[in-house]
Structure formats: C-alpha cells, structure tokens
Image (cartoon, rainbow, N blue to C red; front, side):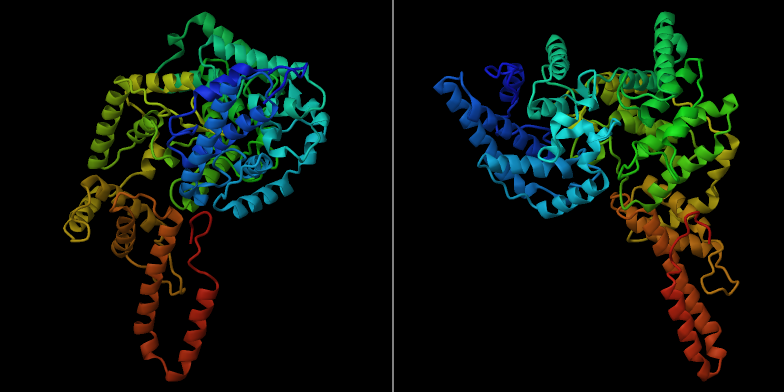
Length: 595
C-alpha cells in the first residue's frame, strides 16, 4: 500500500476501498474461470491487507478487526484452492511474467508470516532463473526503455528503484498502473510525476464509474486501431464513419508513425510494438491513406518471424498474424513485401504444425479457461471459413453456428467475467473492442471470396471423399461420430495423404497408391477426432504416426517381396539397413513438408 508524500496518509485510499468491496463471499478475488488467477489475485490482495494492517494509523478497532477477518478469510480461500492449482497450466504463455512475480509475491507474504505450499513452485523458480538469465534485472539501468518496465513487480529485491526513473513515460512505467505503483512504493524519494499519473488514472476510472484501474493506461492507439480495423474488415466501410472522425483518426495515426520512424505503441510515447504498428498501418490503408511499412520491417523483422520485443522468450502468433494481414493489405500498393509475407506464413504454419493440441498465444486466453464468452472471435473464424468451398455438411454446420452465435449476441448476455478474453498479469476485457466484435458479427453478410489460387488449394476430390464418409460411418468404431466430423476428418486426412504421395523411406522407387495412403491417414485422424476432443494430438504428431504406419507397410512389403528371394547370408545386410533407417529418424517431417 502507498503512503502519500507526507508519509502520514494513504495516497489512494479509494483503491483499498475497492479491494475490500470486491472480495467475494468465499473470500477470494479474480476470475472464477481460472484457478491460477483466483489464487494469485487473492494472494496479492492478502499481501495488500497485511501491509495495511502493519502500517495502519487511523483505523478504529472495528475496522482493524474487519480487515484482519478478511485476511483470514482470504488465506482459507487460498489454502482450499491450492490443491486445484495446475502446474501444467502455469507456463510462459499464461499470465504475463507469472514465473517472475509469483515467487516475489510468495516471499513477501512469507515476510508477513503467511506461508503457502504452492504445487510445482520448484519448476516455477527454475523458469524464473531461466528468464532472468536472458533478461537480467540490471538491464533496466541502461539508457533504453524496456518492455520489462511494464512488470516491475518481478524485480522487487533485485533492482535499485532509484536508478530506473528514466524508464518512465509521462509518469508511467510502460503504461502500467500496477508497475508504476511498485516503482513509487520502492523509491526512497517520492516521485510526484508518477503519483500524478496514478491520480489521473484513478480519477478517470472513478469518473467513468469503473473504480478499478485498468491493466494498461493509456491505450488510445490500441483501442482506436483495433476497433476501427475490426469494423472495416467485417462489412462496414469508411462511409459508415463521420468524415471528421475519419480525418481525426488518420491525422493521429500519421503523426504517431512520423514521430517514431514508422512505428508506434499502445499510446503516444509508449514503447513501440509490431501489433499496434501493423494495426495502425492497416487502418490507414482501409481509410484510404496508406503508409509504408518500412519501419515495421526494419524494427521487428527477425530471422524467421516477427518479434514483439528484442530478446523475447516466446514468439507470438497474434503478432505475426497481424503483421501478415497488414502486409497483405499493403501488397497491392506496389511494395515488394513477398519475403516478409512468406516469413509470417511459414512461422504460423510451423506453429500450427508443431503444436500439441490447441495453439497457445500470449494475449487471447478464452480457450484455456473453463468458460468465457469467446463467441465474437469464434464467429469471425467461422465466417472466414465459409469463404472456402468446403464439403456440404461442414458448411451447413458452420452456417448454423454463425446464426446461433448471432442469436446469442443479440440476447445481450452479461455474465460476470464472461468477456475476459485477454491475458496480461490477469485476464481482462476491453469493452470497446467487445462491442466492435459484436457489431462486426451482427453486420457481416458472410460473403468472403478467395482468389482462384487459394480455392485451388482446397479443390477436393468430392466423390471419393463422399465414399470415404459412407464407408467409415458404417464401421462400429465410428458409427456414432457426427456426419460433419466425419467430413472434416476426411478433409484433414486428404491433406495428410497428399504429403506422403512420394514417401519412399526405403528408396525402392515404389510409392503406395492414393487409396491406401488416404485410408491410413483417415484412420489416424478419425481416432483423434471421434470423441470431439479435437487436436488431442497436433498435426505434426498425426503426420508422423501416419508416416510410421506407411513405413511399416513398406518394410513388410520389402521383406516379403524382396528378402524372401535372397540368399540366407544377406539377411545381416538387411538388418543393418533397417537399423540405419531408424537411427536416422526417417519419420521426422521436413520443415517444408516435402519428402
């Protein structure tokens, strides 16, 4: 908790009041759809209350007893929930920097006499050491502004906060109220500029009747570009915006890009990033004022992907997707961005191919929670899918899902935490963007048309695939599988089998027929999909299993056809050949999926 400059009163008492008022009846805080978030948020709230009790001076005995009772209630909540803590859910793509700030939080609680036995804490500590070795805390002392200033909670006890004041931008630490509060607490001298930033943020939230502080503030560029881009890419046009508003948006974005050599961040003065830069460039193009992406390419293009920040540990899917979309928007304007486009496509394909299950990203979180309203983005994906000439039952299911999604959105569901689709230090939502998604979903006429080149990639042998569905639907193991899942599995198996058309692991210049390859792939894909637990195995694993199955057939055929006619003494040579083949890991799939 923060003392004011005079050291005699609380700097932001309304924040503590909000903390007390938002405690749930079971004693916790945070998103109920995430055990990790609820536990960590309740730990942070407990620490705040404990610190308040240890430094209190103006509360009555009744107030002191109430806060102490709330602490006890919170501690019991945490102890009851810790058995639900899944260490497998705590990774470097979950809550931003959790492997760095959670050990610090636990240590601070321990100093207050509160000790928790967190499952898997040893692994979390190892993750912390690994990341700190890549981005040492001392880097904050350098002259450059770093993204790590966004989460100073992780550096308590590691840095001298008096030496990092240069990391501020208009009083804030990388636009994070929480990080700025940490900086203000641990400085030996009071920073009035940081206090002014926090006071402005608190007052604005009170004025808007939100009371709780946002994850990031301000986020003017981010909110503007995301909302406008979402609307313009979903059936709305520039004519739907007032001309004066268009001019204002264009002027703001052009000035931001000009001031920062063609790149921008979440708001003016904050650290630039490729996400916001790509969105700004896309919006300018969609509003008829395209700008060159040279700054984006020069600053954020890496060897095989676009990075969010230098020295990041995990490449981001959404960043590369947004950059790809931006470059596709700008490609017809005459620039040669083909190599950068190819780089984005390859990175996204490799991430999809190598994933073990659902794709994880740094920012969107809905699919990793037990609940949550991810209807809006799911709706957008289905609409894009309808642009392909897919098999009939899949198309019918998609159309039905789109309509049900629209009906759901029209009903105006408003469940607590249901729209927490984004991930930072905790889950959060962006009301303006949520509203834009809803407008997008309700407006889009579902009329995407792809080029002939793209459609040719999905030119499926429909008659043969219909027969496959008919055959497998009659097998006892798959008779309960829904027709559209059978059709979707046939499509997936078709592409797997195409990759193996020239698969000849023993160098016999003998490849299997398309029918056998299709059946081998279909069996494996259907086993993966039949219980609607899609991507239990990722595509790469399915591909490897399919290739292994085909290789067994090749070996069996080779031994029966060729080895049976050879002299007995040559069998040792065949044994050596097979050993070498396995030792070279011939099932490994090349990165370009060629054989």
